[in-house]
Length: 119
Image (cartoon, helix red, strand yellow):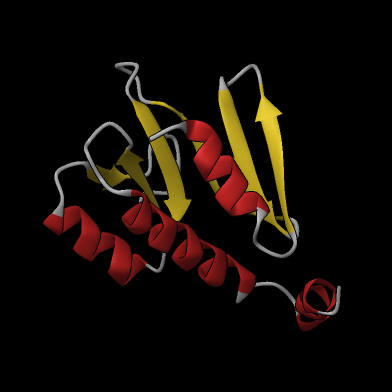
């Protein structure tokens, strides 16, 4: 999977922004002013996508897949890191991205949600 695919998928969602963090070697993704996730590398150099998911969903994914772990350098309850070299297909990663977006969008104020949906 090419990293630009992830950037493009997230950029296609309403109200999102992407920020390159050179010091971290990462791309940071937000909806409104809240973080959806981050794409970077794990301590062993493997590419990862760390995304926010509802705790129960994240726990189930971590129990199901060895290549999904508690969020690397993130809140271990709310964030999950997916190893991008583990063979997951684009559709699966795309669903996780949408779930992360929905999870974070729901926490925005009504005013912030309306500003995004009325564009």
